[in-house]
Length: 178
Image (tube, rainbow, N blue to C red; front, side, top):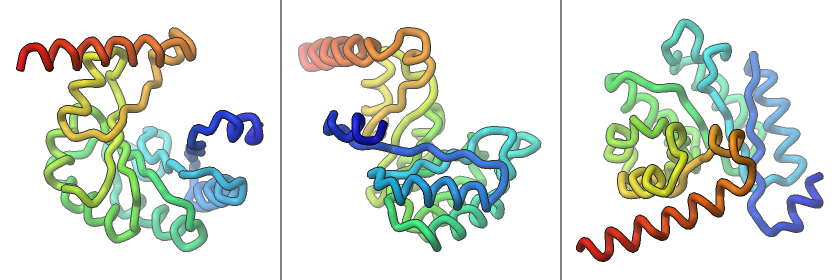
């Protein structure tokens, strides 16, 4: 399957979720050995050790990032659950300390994370992005890209052409308004 994906010329991102730090390490290492362009560490699921009981345990996040970064040199993206404003600075510091290249940010938290992160880290907005207007708003608020999940599951791969068309229309409308 990787050969087929590589033939498209698109970057391949392996997304990892585990129940233990050891699982994150093993899965991230397997993707790195498969030579994906990036490994996403999904630490946002409520079943995961760093997000049990509805709040993000940044010590558990740090444990996973330390262990994975010790083994994996492939660029990393990290997806965290929604954080309280008081935890944002600590989370950003952890992302920087572990040399994380991309932060996968809950779309509603863009306005909190973008100023805290600055220019040192790319941000992908995730959650609530299902059309061109949502995409334009996320990009306008500082995201470099958006992640499409639910709309992809509902519509299939054709969703990307639809959103691209709507995004072009949004940009044309905004350019005309300016």
